[in-house]
Length: 316
Image (cartoon, rainbow, N blue to C red; front, side, top):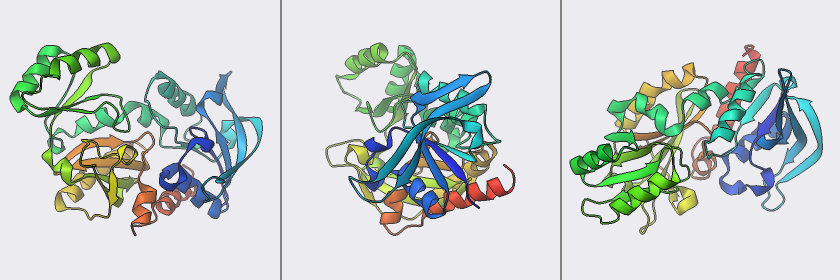
């Protein structure tokens, strides 16, 4: 099977290939003989019910500093492709939401991975709240009285923007922290959306585990250990990747959420687990598969393409 594959992403010249999951997917697709095209989301256009983009033929190489070649830009109806990979990074803002509406016009005749309607309707920090018994105590609100009551109940809390990404603007507020009022002011003037407030999980010092599920089934995991002077374990914020195995609780979490991921057409998902608690379900542009492979784990890019090819063969 040879597929025509377009990838919607931040420009490929800007990525760091050593840890980039989109790049791993492109390498695997090319190795299988699939034909690749590249475009950035600002090139999308809807005209008379048809979705177009300015695409470029793409070749990739696992060579830092020389990792891609692009052909000339062509205006193409995206319905001509077999697969579109929806892989631009957040922020999950109205621009991002609009791209999901546009891609929904071509899916599922053209298989969009992940399903654009589900990406829109299941943002990371909201979708996870469908499983409250798997989460730490969590409040989503911008109401000052609600937030103060939550802080009074739990003392040590974490505050973060609802549609934040990459560990940006994540704050720990201890019980006697005098910065709480200033943080409340900053959040209220910076974001119109509600915020996420959670009980602080001390287990984060041992790592924030990223677990990858492919079509609802466990595929691999990496433990992200924060630097000594930072709350955040994201590798873009200085977190260190370490090999890991799943605990019984983590397997239970995967088994609980797997059917919902499959039902929503979410083929490539990364969940975050701290201690015994699920904190996020990442569906927009999950990462981690190169780190898992580098640490001796499975080839998750190959697993994802196996599922995509099976769905195309079945007419999905």
